[in-house]
Image 1 (cartoon, helix red, strand yellow):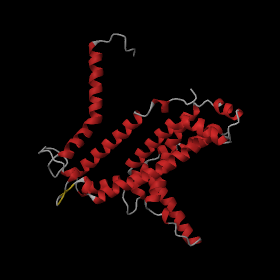
Image 2 (tube, helix red, strand yellow; image 1 turned 60 degrees about the vertical axis):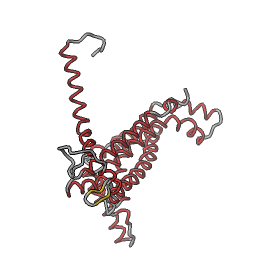
Image 3 (cartoon, helix red, strand yellow; image 1 turned 135 degrees about the vertical axis):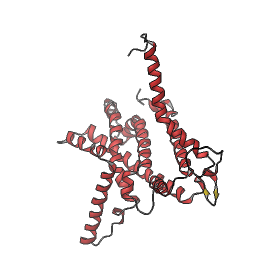
Image 4 (cartoon, one colour; image 1 turned 120 degrees about the vertical axis):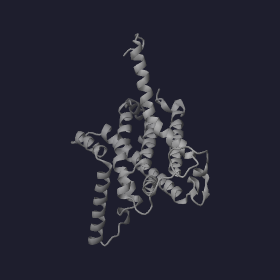
Length: 289
């Protein structure tokens, strides 16, 4: 619809009403969670009693806040470590995949590109079970035939990293490939004709052009790893990431400290998004223009 064309009153009102309902559906639950993180009550729901910061800073019997809860903070750090490893591996391998898809010609290239998307349509629980079964079988085979103990193939953080990486790498590959597809390869050819080495061309021309895609892919990979639950639950060992820890706490009985954790993550995600939006405009431009 062309915005400049006149519209009847009922259509304008309907559009506004739809927008209000849609955004209320998205943000009202988040607002309720954020509000009751400050409720002076032992339950994370109405009615409202009074304002308190105990669920963030409290450290007394019966009321331990987020920053005083050592197991919860340890699980938060575990999630950060796992997300960091997954992000680094996914961006590195995703960049390699992008060059393989865009710059190489080989039989079965289209089939490989389609197979790469398979992890995106597999439910997380099924993916986690598959990774666990395959890794456990490999560990058992190595132990029986070679007398090797491959502990990283047992349930634990290394296996969580591998499980999350198995599907997040597909997303980073798509993001970086989309950027690389628009790259003018004649810029590289001109640099080669001027005597630049392959490494110099990559560092000074190709990599700066890919930087927005690399940063975006890294941010998405980190957030997807951090919030993952289904795959992580199947592969986790004794060191539980935050999502698994929160699930266990919910089963025992929810308290407003979980609201405090949720608010903390919402603020951290918003700050990350604002940081990416406020990056210098020069980083968004093609360095060759």
